[in-house]
View (cartoon, helix red, strand yellow):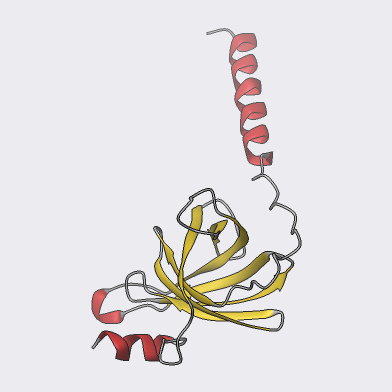
Length: 159
C-alpha cells in the first residue's frame, strides 16, 4: 500500500472519529405552561420503570419507582417539565452496584383516549438526562396517604 493511500485512509478515519465524538443528543424540549389544575403528584405507570409514586410540593418533586428493587426520584419543576436525578441503591448480596443518573419528564396531553395526561421524557446515566432511553408514564390514580414515597417504605410495602 502506498504511503499516500495509507495517509488518506488514516485521515478519513481521524475525521470520522472526530465528527462522531462531536455529535450530541438533541436538546431537551422547552418547558411549556403546566396544564390548569395539574401537577406531578400521583401514581403513574411507566413501561420502563413500573409504578412511580410522586409528590409535588411547590416547585419540587420527590418520590419512588418500583422497578427492580426500587429507585428514588428528586427534582424541580419548570412549567410542565420535571428535571430530576434518580438513584437505584446497590445490593451487595446480589452483586449490584448503585446506579444513578438524571432525567426529564414533561406532562403533556395524552395521545391515548383512555388517559387525559401522560409523562414523556428521557433518562441518562450520571449527569446526562438523555441518551439511555425513553421514560414515559401514564396516570393511574391520586396519591393516597399510605402510598410509599421513600425506598424504606416501598420495601416495607412489598413484604
